Image (cartoon, rainbow, N blue to C red):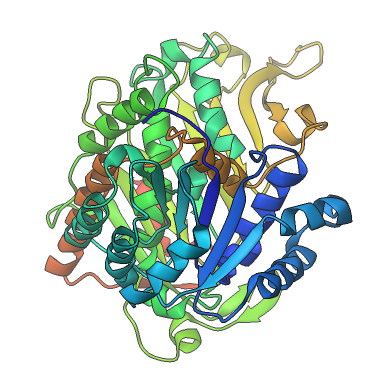
Length: 486
């Protein structure tokens, strides 16, 4: 589809938590910076019985609550609110979509739909959009996860969507791809000549990816207990980071080239099945403990019932291709952990021979750390000589070469991920969205692990809240002489 900005944006789930915290503040930010197309209207829809003015009051309250104070500009807010309209809708009732189409009016200038609803509503919503003439060639749709709970259900959802919206007009969101530091992985790899010669099995010893959270269920109990950490975090965010780190250089920076290379990586992930899950995966569930000095309950107590859902998972993965053969990727994510951060750590192989060994100098392999949140930086750990006359031997110390993105680009406002993704949806740029073949390759790998757990009756090991997960996750790496970067 030719990239062209649409004239109208339709938000399903417009009164939900995601809309209040992320979507409305993001759209306001784009409006305040003059990045939304002139005349773009934004129509919200949900079950709540608002009219236009009621929705504008709702949106203003959300902006008051979630916008930073330095971004609040009454003139800009008034201008943004003037773009907003609202149509109540029960998405399970096809009859209501005719009124929604009437509210939208002429969509010949293009319509973008952001669909943030429960998965069971996808079918009725797509049927309703088609019946009301809201699925034509000038309409594109964006889907917020969850997109299924396994490969079979994911295919069912994708088939439903594909019946009305072909792949080139379908934009699947993984909000991690909208983060500036995640996009900087591509700039770091393919914009600097020094890394590519060693970005392979000859130069890299292993890769670690950690996404740790200090929070528990936070009102997501019903959803989270159905999916667990493997499906909630690894299937999408973690595997997308793996793909960006491991992909071959694309021919150019566009949606087709980049996603072609990512899916090759995802299809090359070595299957972890029943014979491997006990040695290549660790699952855990948080018990009571203390996080940042605050006493917190265990998962079962917080949930209100006994459950075998994992809140932590660690995986030793391999990519079976020429570039990465023999390089382990250690993946880890969990709730109620000691610290909150998202980080990629790439440890290079040691130098083949140390000239400092007989002078007392001890070398550490170089490590590249890419911190995604809460801080955003790229840090290269290198060996340097300590100042001195060296009469008792050369003293070497590992020192960091830091690029703080916050400091380096201090004059540039740091945007939340949804600002970039919403603007790309409006303008029709699919580069940072996930293609169907990527999603299905991710699910195939995840399903094999879950089938392996089931075959082995694997249950999560308890770990105290405020720790770094079960002790078995330490053993997962230390068997290979590797320590988690913490």
